[in-house]
Image 1 (cartoon, rainbow, N blue to C red):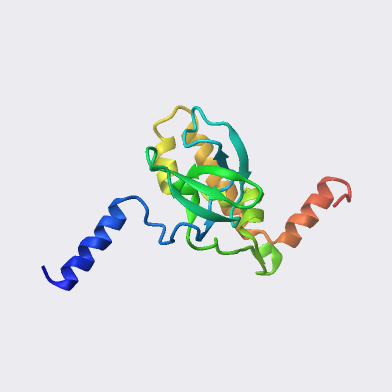
Image 2: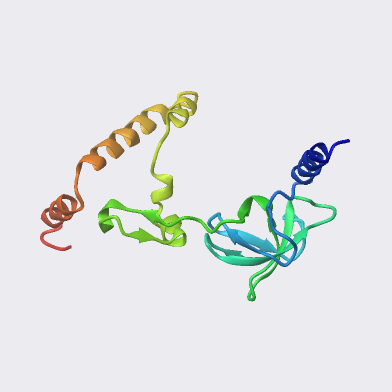
Length: 169
């Protein structure tokens, strides 16, 4: 077997093991999902939640659980336990940019908390909603509202709100 073939086989074995986080035990990873639960044991059904981490939180990775490979041992100095692999990333989440803040970046945790991350409605969501009674009408209404909102500046919205509330901003 050639040296290159051995390298490819080793790389495939690492990927197949479910540990494609590209960090050694004791290395640093980041939380990429909002409200990522950390459990006292590698079992969401039987484990007790010992903490909740937010996007951008840095953790020390201590490996996947031997029996429940989707659960990974993490420690951030305050919370120690197990979280799902899907909550982890070797790269810190990028800052999000909002037009209302003149293009200034905001941190991933603030963006996730704002609800802005869930406001875009895709065509797939519309297709799904078409299979549910009354959901298609609601989805089309939401898409219309998003379209209108995209044409209104922050200052225009503030002015409109002030008129509607009698001057309160």
